[in-house]
Length: 483
Ligand SMILES: [Fe+2]
Ligand SMILES: [Fe+2]
Image (cartoon, rainbow, N blue to C red; front, top):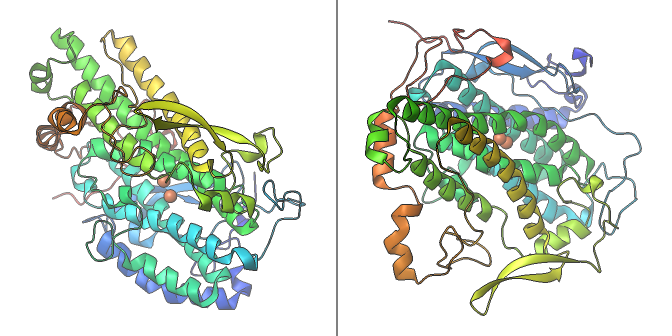
């Protein structure tokens, strides 16, 4: 086990980057801190500022025993700056500088590109907290409420992680970007968050679980490719963030899985075999599988858009520069330069979908998205096992890449989830079969009344298999003030 002393908890900002001897950065972060706390109080979980929550806090960056659990009021959470340990002799694993020692300072010629990548990543972190700020009030259990808050404080820590890099390595413009990260706001007309999916609402818990499954997974893919970076402080920062991200994936996947489990149980109990018998199924107070599929369709398409255009000069430049690699770059067997390589990319050619060999470098966004699709498919496969085990005849599927896209090669294309091309009028007429409807929202809204008894769960979601940190089933994960 790594030494807890690795992290300095004596300064106001816990860290393992020796802030105590880096007065300039420490002071810059201390100046940023009040604005941050103000942001958390305005935009963080609404109505739970004084509530003790059973949260984990990182105490070490070692692979084992890196967190301790205990009750914390969220505004008092020790948001720290934690980087994975430095790897001795690490070299740049890809691009034109492949094999050279990694950079400990920002390489001058790639400064703007690097800053942009850090700002875009940093912007998503507070955005998701903003999107989820009202969900605490309708949590289906204290266990789920606690998981929501854990995700929220960790996304906020990810903001700290990016702000540290900006303040430490980018001087005055870094400081300005750090301020701007607190100024933009999810869904705001005049200063929205940078990426589309982070300006959507997360109105209910089904959406929250979908978001943590699909959108946090985009985050995971981005962090995985930045973890390969030749700019070592970014690489180390992202490697530690990924240890936290695993929990966010778990919350999403297990959340949906528990909803599916409950629906199938209730159907079996009532002797309903037909998953499309929506009225009867909703009458049991559980969420029908077709409504879950519509949410999958929505969130998947929004998340695919986060990968940007399939063909992108920026992506090629970031790779050649040694700034952003591929998913698990070091495990890929090729020359890691890709100058003469091609990569198969699906496109619409003369009214039909065709796979075209594109130059590998500009196709890196498509490649990362493809890795994401594979990762999503595994989770969906596990959901289908739950459905299969119950005997209900239904499968959740991921829609076609061209379905409902707003960015990239399939923007504006009228494709069905199965990948059939139809005219725009027909697409609009059939929209409600494929994407969440007002009815879905009203029904799910009617279900999401809070359940706050320790050990109790709302009727539309099954209890989890295990407690957090092996706590017993009736553990009080959140200590609400009781009248
Ligand atoms: Fe994050
Ligand atoms: Fe996350």
